[in-house]
Amino acid sequence: AAEEGFDVEDVEGAIEAAGHGPLPVLAVVGRPNVGKSTLVNRIIGRREAVVEDKPGVTRDRVTYEAEWAGRRFKVVDTGGWEQDVLGIDASVAAQAEYAIDAADAVVFVVDAKVGATDTDEAVVRLLRKAGKPVVLCANKVDGPSGEADASYLWNLGLGEPHPVSALHGRGTGDMLDAVLEALPEAPEQTFTAAVGGPRRIALIGRPNVGKSSLLNKVAGEERVVVNELAGTTRDPVDELIELGGVTWKFIDTAGIRKRVHLQQGADYYASLRTAAAVEKAEVAVILLDASESISVQDQRIVTMAVEAGRAVVLAFNKWDTLDEERRYYLEREIETELGQVAWAPRVNVSARTGRHMEKLVPAIETALAGWETRVPTGRLNAFLGELVAAHPHPIRGGKQPRILFGTQAGTKPPRFVLFASGFIEAGYRRFVERRLREEFGFEGTPLHISVRVRE
Ligand code: GDP
Ligand code: GDP
Image (tube, rainbow, N blue to C red; front, side, top):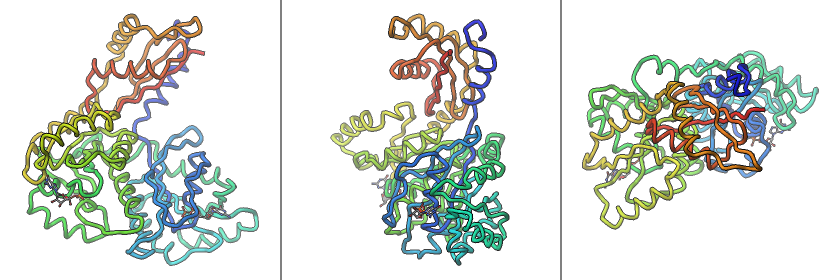
């Protein structure tokens, strides 16, 4: 490395930063209007309008990446969803529960000016039950005079209340220090599964694509009855299902089977649930309704899985209903609308007739194999050397930026760091990614590629 103009520490630092693996997840929960979204904006360092004054505004994005004191983590925002037919307590509890379930640590936000309400107490009970580390945020302490309000919250029994003004930033640094102490370096659930236990599948897709039908088909009718009972509790229930001689863990099958009929906030509720399932899973099986046009909502779900860095399988359901014309248009739509996952294995199934169900497991295995692929540094550099020689970067301003060497810093998904002599253009980066895929497979997995430029 040294002779290429990078010093060893730079290189090691870059590899460590890129190879972090899955990030720990922080959930921000609390009643409506306590300032959750404002706080999330603070944490992710963005002031753009995630906060809206309209109650019940639905938002599709619920997870964000954040960094504090050099550590990166994900934040799940449960704000932006007002109330539904379950009533306020039940809805706050339900959404908090999904978020807590997916999280490694929780920030519980209370409005210090209002004090603890019954709804807050209900969330406290959930937090106790979940046993995850909690940081208590006493929000809306905009000045020193509010500190006394915050100290009342010791009564909640969750330890020290951190007085914060999410709006003005006061106290947020100290609170984030406490968050870092509460968060594990690496997420528990993802790592325990990496070591052993059944592989985890999130079966996701917009309403009515056939998720519960597919699940019933693969699990067999008998199991369904049992699980409908389990689903009557509000606990998200994962289910072990044997497929192709292997036991898999399907995440949040209760959520798939239980038809929750919500009006207001239903979309948000669904995306929170989907995000939570994706966080807990290794591979996302994204179900689409082949009989209908690929929608923006389908694409959002795809983006969610890709951004979470999960292995992806695309399953086109209701194949039994397709005529030749629809098949023709579907192929065109897939090309134009699903280009971001052109690398994902695809199966065309029918939950109704059982068509091609046997192809599901091989596709999942392929995607997981791609997700875990590690390319030895020697092979990678031989490949990069040939690539750069055969297809040099275009000359810019009389100079020719060159990829000098690279390494794979991590897997699940594969993460690469490339070291270059100058700025590598986006088009060339995409070209490198395409060639990497051609050379090494990586079917069913997103790739993270970062480029370091020599000073
Ligand atoms: P959420 O429903 O919990 O996500 O709450 P929001 O983040 O949407 O905030 C609800 C309202 O409280 C908004 O009008 C915010 O501007 C306001 N708010 C949030 N944080 C603070 C704060 O620290 N101080 C004050 N004074 N107002 C705040
Ligand atoms: P979910 O909301 O994604 O769980 O979707 P459901 O499993 O409840 O299915 C929605 C509707 O699509 C139901 O009426 C199912 O009977 C129907 N459906 C599901 N899979 C298929 C399929 O493969 N073929 C056909 N023709 N209908 C299906």
